[in-house]
Image 1 (cartoon, rainbow, N blue to C red):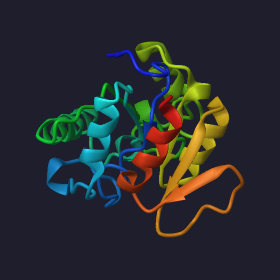
Image 2: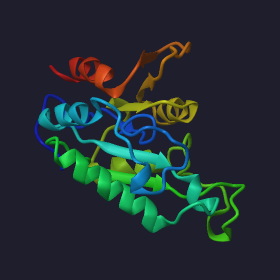
Image 3: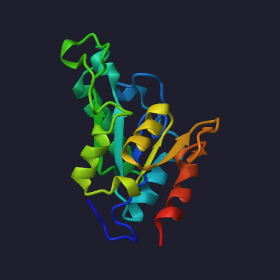
Image 4: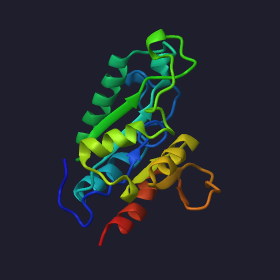
Length: 188
């Protein structure tokens, strides 16, 4: 969904999922393991209210490793969407990569252009939502997220307790803390 804004093709992310929106408990493949990070839903709602498309892109190697299946990932995303709706927020597109080169499930044991830091999922979001990746933001808590930003020419925000020491990467403790910074740079 695109809404007229100062820069309709800009987006606050591709947002990572685990460690950005929900707590990264490691291989979150069931709703019982989903805990939302304080302020994440409200931050997404601010992007929504500004008319900025929001895409979630997440590596889900747990599928390749046989820890859970594709249907489990879909259920977790549905649960996240339902929770976000309760906060007046939504994600325009959820994308995930179930592949990993050392996976034990043969169908998913391979390299993929979709696995971050490769650009496949971001390019799919670009096509589906009509985005300009060079005017977009990648927000996440792992080096793969920063690598994705570099691969597509997007701006990068690193989330975590420690600062990312790389030039041109902004660091914040949470998505809630980063949201005003992103919105200032997207607004006219």
